[in-house]
Amino acid sequence: MTRIKHVERLESTTLRLGGEGDNWHMSWADDGRQYVALCDGRGWADVEGYTGQSYNTRVYAIEGEPPDISFVHLPGFPDLLIGEPPDLHRYYGFGILALDGCIYHYLSTPNHIFSESGARFIGAKLVYSPDAGRTWCNQDGSTPVRWEPRDQRSRGNMLFFEEPGESFTLITVLQMGQNYEHNRDGYVYLYSPNGNTEGTMNELVLARVPKDRILDRVSYEFFSGRDGVGRSTWSSDIQCRAAVHTFVPGWVNVKYHPYAWHPSVVYNAALGVYMMTNWGMGIDANGDSDEPGMWFRKPSYLGVWEAQAPEGPWTQVYEEEAWMPTGDAGAHAYQPQISPQWIAPDGKSLWLVWTDFQDLDGEKPYYAFNLQKVRIDVD
Image (cartoon, rainbow, N blue to C red; front, side, top):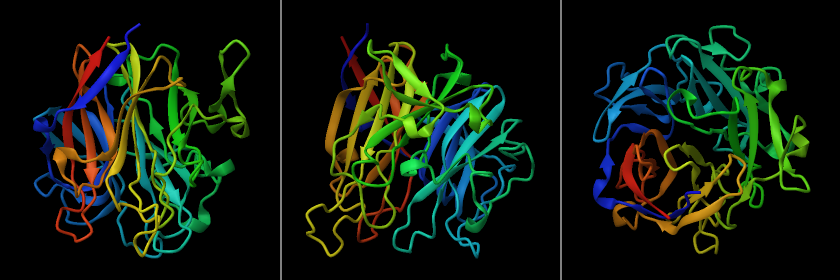
């Protein structure tokens, strides 16, 4: 059994490819493209389809491999503009899966606008494209996509909504090669923080669904622990969910909206291991500022873990308590994403994509698409 001994970020390989937006969840499709979700930004001014408007969510295609990559606008994705009254800050696209010509996209929704006290994510909407991004449908198959205002959101039109503990509101989809080719059990796996507080947001929970039943909420089941001989158990009752891993405490913000421990997980087929990277929010935990618990007050936490199964157990192989790409002490890096396409054929390197928040004085770009090669040492 291959075990990862260590990983190393190769600072000299860093590429900063500009644009405006963040988060960058990716999936590798059968057409050879990666599909990537952008949140809160305008995208790239030199990409056809640029409007200069800011979007809560937009989906692009990525073609090529580093350093020669290009971004392609998908004109069929329904506009979701920032600042459209009366429903400012609506849906944020995170988990994405390209499978058999379809694209499935999970969008998180908050309880109210983020400028109000107590804002947090409380649900996730599922939309999909049956034709590689040309047209898009609601979960029930209807079109055009409806961006329901807050007072119309419910379990009838959201995949997850006001679930126990506010779990499954920030979705990550396990990536398993091009067109999910390395999957053998027929399930799609979804990870999420277990809630919105310190002690729940740093717990990781897991759901699975047959890959031909993704649109059917009743078909989702939840990891519920292990039996007396160590076998994984699953339940259709979300109340029975159990954490597959618990991350270190002290990295969840309590100001603005809670936002941390939202992972990226891939299957590294060459090594035969599942790999996860995750991040904790750099907060002022000691109250040394006028806003204790506010986000982006110091560099983030960065970790990498490995496992032999989607549900773990997960073993940590890398840790940084001050994640500073290129040694930048002013970095506020977040949402590290492992590109499912850009894993070396021997599995011993990959490309990590992330976003960097502006420094407190606003001297740096607000968001950007950054990537860096990571070397993997194995036994």
